[in-house]
Length: 358
Image (cartoon, rainbow, N blue to C red; front, top):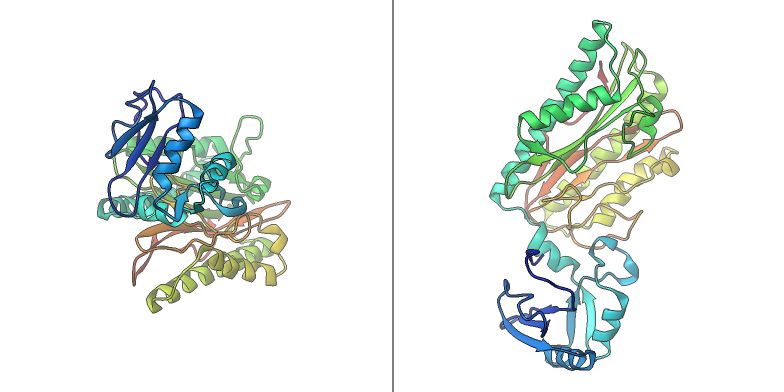
């Protein structure tokens, strides 16, 4: 959050205190007095541990509580960065330690106009990539050319490079039984060839290779053949319904001006899948925060892996991606949702309402 550059040595403990009013205070070791020189505020130096504790006591003595990167019982691990011992130390001064999760959202998770524009463009680009990948598979099969998970992945990676989009990992291209593994990664040893009767899942995420760009993240599925097998169609219909129920719930709450929480959205999607008898096969959260990284620091759509009780705040973005994963195949449908005070935007606007026939 502080965007510190690595040019300074920081081998000793340092603290940065930002009061609700007034100037920040920097506490650093005397052998590294410039450790926080990039930041505004008064600098206080210490040497030994006893002096450190006394300085910390003076810094926080004017407040009753302080927000730290802490989550009670580690309910939201993505914001639990401070160690238990440091929390104990601050509490020993008579100060209540609360979670900074919502403050972090305000500072880090909100998208400005440029970031939102880049997110829309990335989502539109990914939608084009999905269509092109399915077309590439279709053409290759018609020409009797071998096409595999790795071949399609390479096709997509090259598409990213040509258009100056970047991603922290290559896209997921999963075929047949591999679609039942939510985070399957194609490899030479596991590489499946696509053939008639294959189910193909594409999970793509990327952002522009420039400053203040924001990720987009989508998942679509296709089937090589003229008629979808009944079991695959059944599971897709349930996943689609769960996705749409979650989106409709978000839209209704936002337009009505009611508070919106990630754990409730997860419950809405999970209820659909559970009541259809597939609850045990929905093995991950419904969605994650999206921003500078594809998994970002805002509130996630989760009451399964974690207890996400942070509020969904305006100008933030997250995915909705319910899935059902069986032994022979899996289905996931993923879109991105941006919320403002009275506005909900889904990207890309085109939702997958039917399995693509390849």
